[in-house]
Length: 119
Image 1 (cartoon, rainbow, N blue to C red):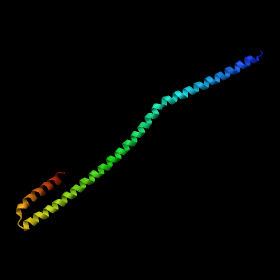
Image 2 (cartoon, rainbow, N blue to C red):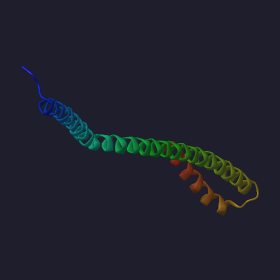
Image 3 (tube, rainbow, N blue to C red):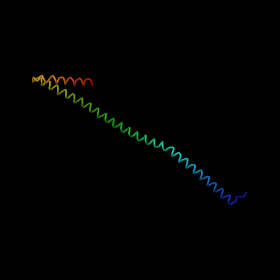
Image 4 (cartoon, rainbow, N blue to C red):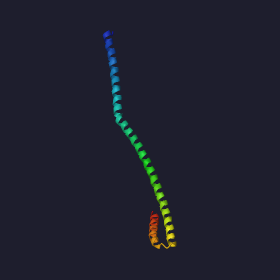
């Protein structure tokens, strides 16, 4: 069986057509795969951004908590100082016969002590 030149060209063109068809199918499959993965990739980026935001918010809350704790400690120190000043004033009023002012100071002292004990 002899193959003519026309048949040879037909076989060559058919092989090239088959190769091009296979390459086209591979390209379409990879394109489809890329398009199918696009939402997942976008979702992963969004989750990563949210994780960063959550970490920043947690850091900010921790910082605020520390500042709040420091303010509470400062308030306790301030109240103890106020108690010391009130004690001094009560003692001073007792020595200088200003007993009218001592009653108000005693009430203030009692209020501060109740606050500290009920904390």
